[in-house]
Length: 517
Ligand code: AMP
Ligand code: MG
Image (tube, rainbow, N blue to C red):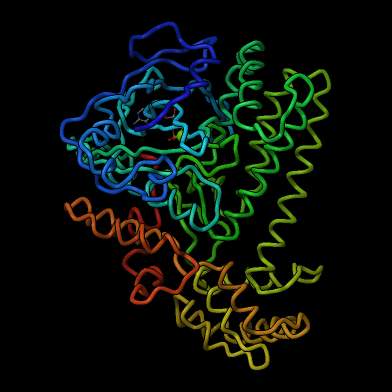
């Protein structure tokens, strides 16, 4: 069914202990651990694209054998299960060893096309890195991870993928707002898929422990397995590799900032070495444009991980990765070039992305001011980001009509209050479009390819969760389907593009999310 080639296990040192008790693991990159079986698994949803990438057809996906694997109840021949060891900076502080506390790798599947895919079950039971936690995941957070991984992919944002969403038939107890009200919730397991789940924190931990040999081996391994196209020489090209990681991270940040995604927990253990979006927790999508918005209630007071700060935080995280790599370098200053490259690429990508969003054939110097003015207006007038940019494509540059954009406002009073400002901005923008001189049809097509109609709005995910918790998974399937073509107008699917309704403004799960998952 699947072919495995488990290089991470084969080429990196493992923990000699086999028993599954929480511990500090030294001198090893992984610990062997079996998933803990669950009582009554059901396949709630799967991604046909990810299944196809793994050569798993519909019949296999429907089979009890595969369900047992995706639930953590059995392993296939060639699989080997383990949890990986990493550390991380959490909210700006070094947190020591973290590791896969509830994620269990099943090995590296090699597709018929020769593609390598690490398979990982999230919520499959405790590992030696679980500390005092239960190793499980609740249905609500698993639905959010499953849907958003796939939505991001179809938006063109680098991300880990999700093969399957399995209900465990077991209850998981969570105190959602850490306020002394634990309740039993349905449990679930997501099978995530990526070429590599290696994080910045994998390198930080051996560095923090001054374990140079382990760090060296992990760096060499990652350079060869995860960056084969670069054909780097591990002995000489450390700085060049770091630059590549910086570039990928810069591309990722520009994507998040163009689609309005807020990760919510950009700790260094949640940063992928491949520049993928990883670890979907209390993430959120910008509804009304607010640079200071964070979906994460744990971050509500300091707003370290709010929308506008993400590119700066990614750079800070890269600096922490650089600190770790410096341990192996005779001239650590060589790493500065990577950070400079980060700044360059992010700035360039951001301009390219927003030129496309605004329908400009190229970004010019003054466009920064035009965009700043728009951001200020969108923030003050509480304008919906997704709806605004999408509607802008229909603007007639000879007769810019503000009414086209009325649907993007949440509040009539703010719309009236800012009507003059909106008109002024539209006049300036229309003049810029005329100067740019693209044919209207071309511009509209270009803008529609850059501005999604459908994103996984927080309240939509919450509605799918509410239904699923009552046993109805239809909305998960509907959302998965709509979000496969986020840039296309889809007939009969307007409700999935609707602005956040009033009831969702302050509801848990819709605008406020906790890390409890
Ligand atoms: P996160 O906030 O999801 O990035 O997780 C931070 C650390 O806590 C990682 O080491 C996770 O594996 C671990 N962790 C989070 N939730 C659980 C859980 N329910 N059981 C075991 N470990 C967990
Ligand atoms: Mg994490």
